[in-house]
Length: 154
Image (cartoon, rainbow, N blue to C red; front, top):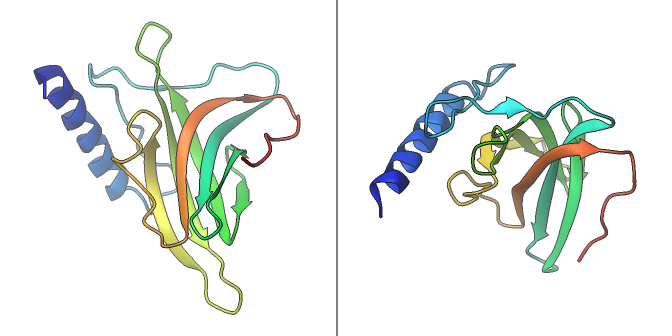
């Protein structure tokens, strides 16, 4: 592994530790890029700020791409996924999208269970993942949605 890759991993790990420490807080601490510059919110424009997510149902082996608006809960199977924030790199930096997700499982007839609260990175999904027997969820991008129908299942 190169020195640059180790530096990036170290910065990402530090950001995850900070995010993990603030997982219960209302406003999560924002992670930073490897060079120390902070990530930023998606620039204002038409539409809503959303995280583009991909979910996998391991039982049916079906994947689905869907948009989760920032600040709202979105359903995927029995999961309720709330995007607390969605950040991107500056235009002059390598592409990166980072979303703060809170994932709660609402199984019928059972108490809700918080499965995940933290930052997920689009470029390194294995760094911070949802550990669940039935579902996988990963961040693909942070973008502005124009109010159209979400992409269909694949």
